[in-house]
Length: 139
Image (cartoon, rainbow, N blue to C red; front, side):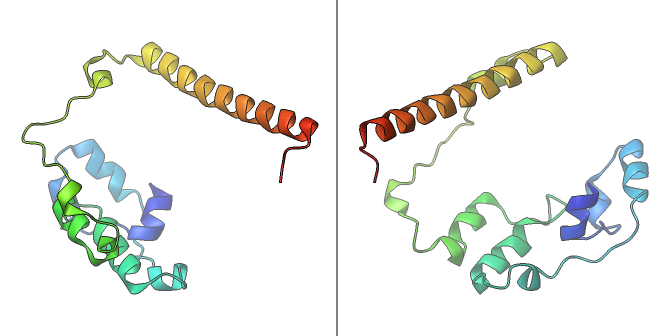
């Protein structure tokens, strides 16, 4: 949280207004007050639209953040969007893993599987590159 607060600033009382758990509030009180980072200084080459977007989404209180729809309509994404191809789903999307019982052991198992999956991909890519080098077919 300390790293996050270095960017978004330490939450004010109004920022914390949505937090109802007393232990969570006590935890938040442990952080020394600090201002929001100047994102224009932190990312000097970024276009103004990108800085504006970050300012609007990097907000502690979810009620003060812009909505998903507002995110998509933000000028940062104007050139990328194609509203004709965007589907509006009338019901929540349920992902299969959300139905799983995720105790500590199962979560660990899934994390290890995911790590192994990407390790296998990396090794396969390395083998393809090694084979291409051996055959002299690289650029």
